[in-house]
Amino acid sequence: MTMVRQTKQRLAVLEVLREARSHPDAAWIHAQVRQQLPSVSLGTVYRTLDALVRDGVVVTLERAGQATRYDYKHEGRTHPHAVCRTCGAIFDLDAGDVPAVPASALPPGFQVTDVRLEFMGLCPGCQSA
Image (cartoon, rainbow, N blue to C red; front, side):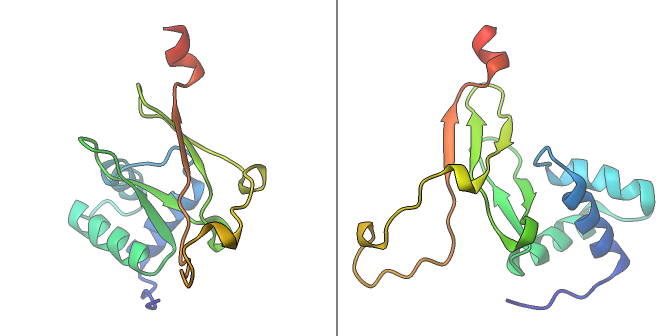
């Protein structure tokens, strides 16, 4: 893990991500940060997000044909998501609600460094449409 310098731009991006509950893309994050720092560029936001991902503070949520979305790792942990296949909405799930996978289910000697769990389906809004 690298140590990310704490510039005002990075602190602003991190604060936006901490408060966001929508798993935003870089353009949305940029618009929010510009409210605090009007001169910040989209390129700076992308570089900051890349650094935060490398540092393990933020994870990416990627879907084919869509902009990369970002999720802050609250308390340094990832958590499972439910993803609507129709509208793309992403919902956080409590990791405590998901049963643990026993070590015996993994290949012998396999070292887990991160876990990403997603449930794909239809949100209530898309089901009723």
